[in-house]
Amino acid sequence: AQQQQGKARQGKAKPGRMALAAAVARAARGAQARGPAAARALSTTVPLTMRAVQVRNTGAAEVLREDAEVPVPQPGPGEILVRNDFTGLNFIDTYHRSGLYATKLPFTLGVEGAGQVMSRGDGVPDDKFSVGERVCYYGTGSYAEYTVVPMTQAVGVWDEISQEDAVTCVTQGMTAHCLARSTFPLAEGDTAFIQAAAGGTGQLLVQIAKIMGARVIGTSSTPKLDLGYQCGADIMLPYDQLSHDEIVQAVKEATDGRGASVAYDGVGLRTFEMSLNSLRPRGCCVLFGNASGPVPPIDPLTLTSKGSLFLTRPKFYDYIESQEDLQTRMDELFKWVLEGKLKTNVQKVFRLADAAEAHRFIEGGNTVGKVLIDTRK
Image (cartoon, rainbow, N blue to C red):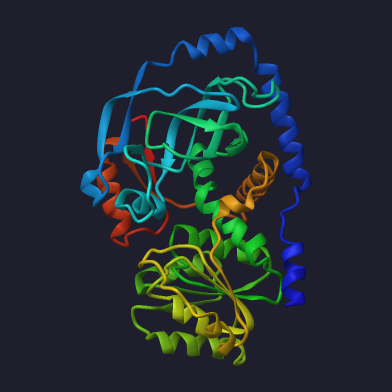
């Protein structure tokens, strides 16, 4: 327990020199480019209505329809208006659409995006988010041409980073970063057991785990095994060929009978017990998704009987204490991308009008990378 607490104290990411230098340079560029005339010129290009995908009734993918007459939102105090280039698809979008995660109807789908700042609300500091600056963000309503974003949930995008890479680093990248750097801070000597290691978040998590010096054992379907190895996994186990007990046994054999230090599980119902059984005494099971369905309630005594295990169900929003903390974490991701240590993998890009098809695609188990919507099309 003391070892676990010590790791938690070390988990918060620290900005490297490159990240700090880039942040300073970005702020300087923004200050030079910002001016009332430029702000007025760009703001006048914002139309009164926009295209957006709204959910009026929850259900299957068929409920998604593009609406071409949605009013463009206006930024309030502390907010910015972003003209989106891309929005990222995430499994949480399907939970909102289906009603698994209740949301007041009607609403516009989407929890992340990348684009340009079009206007600023009162209270946005002069040295942040100049009109025309490229940003990425997490929030709500990104399946749209325009989105209002709290400034605390947006970051500037480095000049060397593409919009596609930037949006990939938001929900999936930040989730992987928080899992490996804070929820259970990985270090050399740890063994991480990663379910769905060849999925969008899984690929990033495998790479970050290797950056941290951990050993990685992953699971995937047989056709995706090579993807896991390409990301740096030491061992990949096919869950479509091996039983749960066989996978647990393989993990134990690969760790001299002890088990993994941590299990990162975004699959949920189908793999939860496998993840618990693969851990060493005092290991940690990190549940961060419900791709196969939500996990049922668990008796705490089960954790005792399996070796005094830890269990947590995080979401990355709770790991972001401020806009500066968000920028620091994103800067570390951007740095790794530029250094070639972290490779993003954009698998497919859909048009905004094809959002229903995009949801069927990710729910069909077809993902081997990030799926985006180009909100300009």
